[in-house]
Length: 410
Image 1 (cartoon, helix red, strand yellow):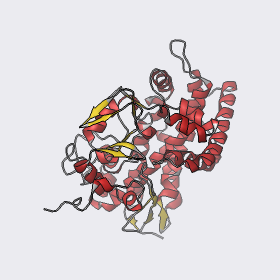
Image 2 (cartoon, rainbow, N blue to C red):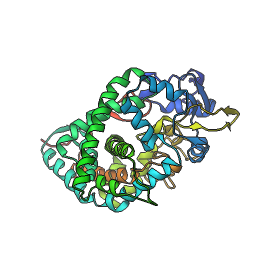
Image 3 (cartoon, rainbow, N blue to C red):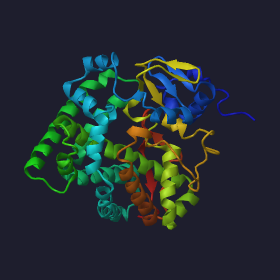
């Protein structure tokens, strides 16, 4: 039997190739089979197997904080605002700072506060669907996948809804820096966005210090443990992170989830008609095509020599973790390239694992569990316009560029 990767040579893998970025799955398979610990001149060590990636995510010998000389290289081209975010965001800090900051944030960003968003999310998606009711076609990205998550985080922080377009523009500019290989040419625009975003967050903090409310910013300001609280810089970085990461990846999850279900009509019918199937369906979507294909923070950095397979990885070497490949590893899942919402024991790595597991995972799950079945129920004849999807050309994020659908109405 001929494998789909028989004609792929892992040593020729080019992470910038547009064909790979359109369909990375065959190359993931080739890397796992031929070179699971792959040394790339621009990326560093690239891991593709579930077992190796799971181990690194839980191994305290690996950190997120960028070491020298990589830090100096980035600092040479980055404005002060980007450095502030890089040195104070949960995505780029290690214990003991990470332990302190995450503990304080967890006091405020807790399950009760997230669950309180449920009625607001339900009302928002119903309002959007009411407006779309008579339309013959619409774009899921534009009309649903982007508006709902950004509404969720702006509501969580009590930020004006009228600022959503501005927040989205800042997010696009800043997250361009996260793409791999790093393109230093995007730093100036990212710096301008970071300057404006941090000033915006600073104004919010000043206002909430004067007039605290029942919102996440006020709770972050008030959070204290053993006499410790968030510094001003950590508070600003946390607000930016929540507004930035809290909508981009969830937009990917909602749009990709609807595309997958509409591509598998029987699964769509079950999600539409059986509420009990929804949580597991969302977990299978996260496994099969999770929003992050590379672990957050860009990767991990060993703080001492570590051997994986036959490869000795020296301190300061970047280690990139291909989450999208790990979640398709046949050593972990039976028939991993089959989309199956009845799959059991879905221990995917879409939200990471260990100390740095995604803080917003519960919010992303909640929004997807509400929005996806609501859309399918409202439009039982919903269908894809394009047989072949158009993906954003990114290594790090798996996100549709557009998702036009027909409703069977209008």
